[in-house]
Image (tube, rainbow, N blue to C red; front, side, top):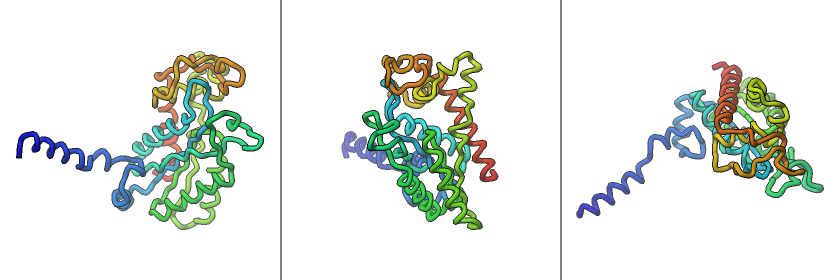
Length: 263
């Protein structure tokens, strides 16, 4: 065998060999079924079902903002818990009515899933996790409109499974703790700066998690024009602030989950 052939064979072996990092992933979709089986048998019996959304976020931020943010935070939460995996992020959530369009459905690119269908999606994902062997199923959502459906599904299945040893935990603290906004106000930013959608908090967090998904030159107070979909001043956002906001989300959720499951 020539030196070139030997090198090619060696490189092929490296490419085909399973990496330890891949097998140690906390993301369900990155694992094989046997790897999941073995992790559950070894005590990884918590799974996080994270919901995002596909909605407008002004001219400066992509439609998948919630999905990118919660994919990152859920992974970090799972690592901190030490016995958890993360299910594929739910990107289809209630975003408004279709006819006539309301809410985010008034903007191109948004995708809505009406509540009954959203609830059914969550319910059967959770039922699947129970069949898999997970004992604690944690639901977190990066958007306000996601919360009611998660709570209702958790309540329904907990009532049905009472005494079974399987519990569904909706953790609203992930979304509603308010720690990041309080921090920003302590730094001197106003409620108008912070806003309620696609302003400082959202923009900073996504900028830290995935800067390619921000269009910095498109940022403007209030989005720059009427009907932009922006509330707040994204020009005051930064990845440095985003790192702080993301850490707040991770910390408060880990605390809440540990309390809920008795860790």
